[in-house]
Length: 88
Image (cartoon, rainbow, N blue to C red; front, side, top):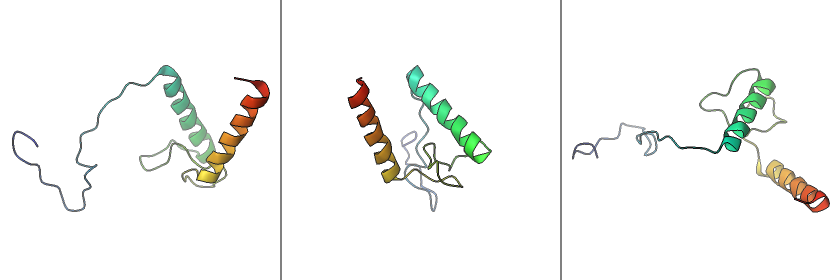
């Protein structure tokens, strides 16, 4: 609601689209991780990610597409094996 009046939704506009953007604070390590993902994206695809491109993308794909659950599971299982063998 804006000034007591309900703002009308435009045709085809989702509920999420009409909400104002909010700024959030991120820890420095998270910021660095996101910067690294952006760098990897640009290195892989030759351009920075656009608004509809996934930040976490499938590294085996020739075009930007979200990473699939199976790939994430492989990374996690490799990570957990690494922690078990080397320790935290």
